[in-house]
Length: 46
Image 1 (cartoon, rainbow, N blue to C red):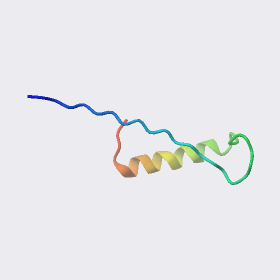
Image 2 (image 1 turned 180 degrees about the horizontal axis):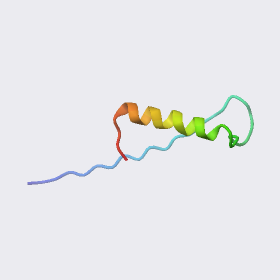
Image 3 (image 1 turned 180 degrees about the vertical axis):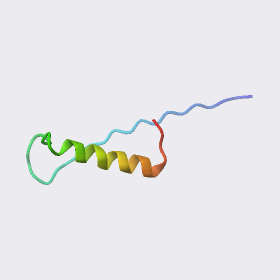
Image 4 (image 1 turned 120 degrees about the horizontal axis):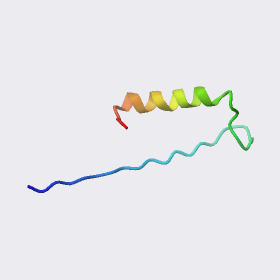
């Protein structure tokens, strides 16, 4: 019996409204929490 394996890679790119070059360290936990919530709500597993 044949088996098909598939991998999907997702690359996220962010553009923030301010023109700063980097995301500040105090905002990183909120950003990671937001991204994690989106991933969990779609039912994706690592």
